[in-house]
Amino acid sequence: MIDITYFHRNPSSGYSIGKVSRTYISEIEKTENVKHVYIPAAKAGLWSILKNMWYAYRHQNIIGINHITGAVHYLAFVLPHKKTVVTLHDIRFFEESKGLKRLLFKVFWLYFPFLHVAKVVCISEETKRKVIKYHLCSPEKLIVIPNAVDDSFKQIEYTFNAINPRILCIGTGENKNLYRTIEALKGIPCHLRIIGTLNSALLEHLQSCRIDYSNAFHLSDTEIIDEYVQSDIVSFVSCYEGFGMPIIEAQAVGRPVLTSDIYPMKDIAAKGAVLVDPYDISAIRTGFMSIIEKKELRDEIVKEGLCNVKNYTPMYVANEYLRIYHTL
Image 1 (cartoon, one colour):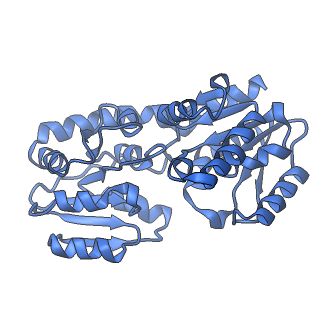
Image 2 (cartoon, helix red, strand yellow):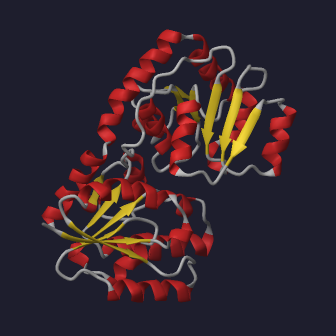
Image 3 (cartoon, rainbow, N blue to C red):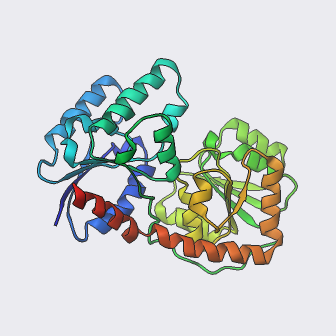
């Protein structure tokens, strides 16, 4: 039995990293001795960082494994170098920053923390490629282990509504490409279901394109699963992702997926989705129409999707992490 201490960011900092971490950790807890440490400060100011580092130092696992589950990579400075693993979800914060801020991110959030750990786990090949591209870590330390889809996402049979399909979009951030998605759906009979808060620009665009839509946010896990179940198509035509959980969540429920023909989405989806250029509104529209009009295509991508999710089970991902722990 291995002693593993998981270091998580403060829960108020965000939900997604904690959710995907919990999925594989719950499997590891069945066989290993696991402890969870949640850092006290949610902010990223100097005092908060020092406070979190001191807290992590006091709770470090001297004899076992220390695993930073994401975002707070700087905790690596105070943890045992040869017994620490960090999971990297994406480097969007670095790529989109400039000047001194970009330099600080590179040095203190990425390069030096990665220098002080035994292994860096990237959740996709695309994330690994970018780490190598920007010389953020020695390639020998990098390992790719995907996120896992929660077992609660199960296939639910349904009858596809080809007359007025319900199209589900998860997330409303700029990278989710919702503006182009709305434009692509202009004139197509459908109901667009959007999960996430909508700003005034998106609301105006929905009205100008005369899109029939509804909106919800702050949903529970059970409510999120029900959104997938109630959908006919899941749209995830994102311009930037570290992974793309809605793709495999939709596949697990058995819904046709429309996603981006760029990495990492095309890797994650495999053959279980219609792939389109996320920057081409016409291509997005054609993708929607092909799913709506072609039953054989829908059936094929759903079938391929159900096969694909077998590569993202909690047990598979947990075993991949355990393999790393056993080498340290």
